Length: 292
Length: 330
View 1: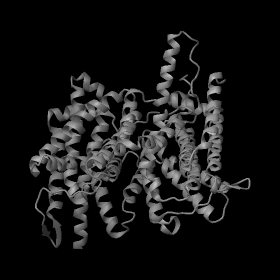
View 2 (view 1 turned 90 degrees about the vertical axis):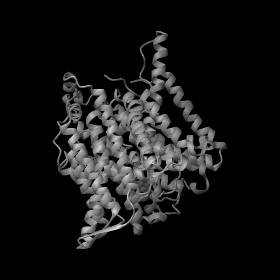
View 3 (view 1 turned 120 degrees about the horizontal axis):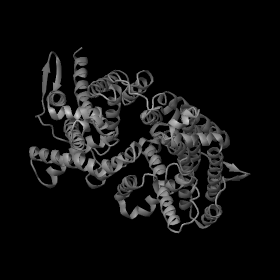
View 4 (view 1 turned 60 degrees about the horizontal axis):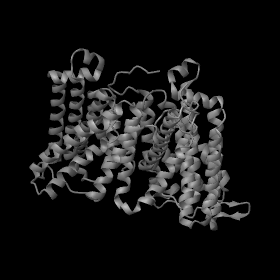
């Protein structure tokens, strides 16, 4: 039983990280019809910004984290939107999809060839150690992940529902034309969404890298998980992405323990196919009107 | 529909070039050219899915894998290659049909996600089901066929001609297909799905058919690939490889008849030419794709098309003839 509780909690912890990546993915889709196929690489690379700052600029851990956050916001937030998404939106969804696929290759190859192809240790924000709660032994890092990720999700929800800016963002996501009529600066809101996504992937990156190590090809699995979580929960719902993240995290950990480690990556995918078959709008999603 | 004279001359010249130049090539050059022909077949299939039916498939390498393993298992157990080619194509078509059916019930990008999942699952099966696929060690000593009593195993040039002949066969079939009423329905679908469906085209059935045929051609290419390289393992059929096929079609020019051939040539030959750049090749390729998407999403042939049209307009020539096999929107 203690083993099960342990699995449950570490599943929730990884699920919380997946949820962060999935929320960003969903937000981008909602506000600017951007399906970001580089989302996995976006979660992979901020850890390397931090590592590079520690190695080349010889910064301490926390200054390096700050540096990494700023670089992530600038490159994966602002530059991504202004240099890649904006010029392509007028061509429709497909070219942008292809461009983000190319961007994923670009990021991956850059890290592999100009930093390292080896898996890198990444320091946790808390000292290593374990805490025992009700017979289950949990690492400090797992607890940190749960606390930080849940706090981030709650803060995000409060921001989106309680602040004027957040409500403007939601309006932009729901109906662009009406948002413009209401005098909302749509472009500024979209930029804000991209920055928010950058902040979320940064958080996900520094939380997951101490668990799975930082490696150039981590993005493949992470991206897959982010899409899956977003679709399982409902492509057009932030709440859905959160639920999807937790479901995938739990399913992943429980399969690895009780069914098969060889096929653990298959479970989220089977879940994805089942959702598409039986509930294409996702668990919490609203059905979108069909275009044809 | 008549092809302009210069188009026929260009096609004949290209064909002659493909037949004559390899005579003096070393085995490695022939391997690359054969690879180009094989990948072109897979890319032509994907072009039907992407360029004509407008659906993103991220599973072409997985279909290649299905075909390659089918052929490897059959030919190492004594079946002739032609039977393996047929079986692989049929299996690819069937899997494509089953996979596309649920995804295409819902519009948008769901086929992309389903094919993404399929690629990863297929890779896991190739890697983990050791009893069937040899796991990470793969299957080796895949025999090459004997053509008209002439074993191609010792003659790479002959095997190249075999691959080229298969490519031409596929192209001829595709040419017929895109000019038949069926193919016209595909084009109607791409240009304006709403109008197509209001004119009585069953858009879902045609999209599904385009995807299944594309998958079948991917598997056919896979069977040829197995015979070409004679050793297969799961690493050739990953998601990254599927993305490579997608980029091939897009870079060449999706929806253009010859686009996939151009894209495949770039994808196979560019790494060789850019070998001196070492780690930079894929980075440069990715930049090329991004620039192309921002500037001219219809790919290199689209770019060429645009330049030719501009030249024609400047010289006040006759209205532009359909170029390179892409019919302008009705």
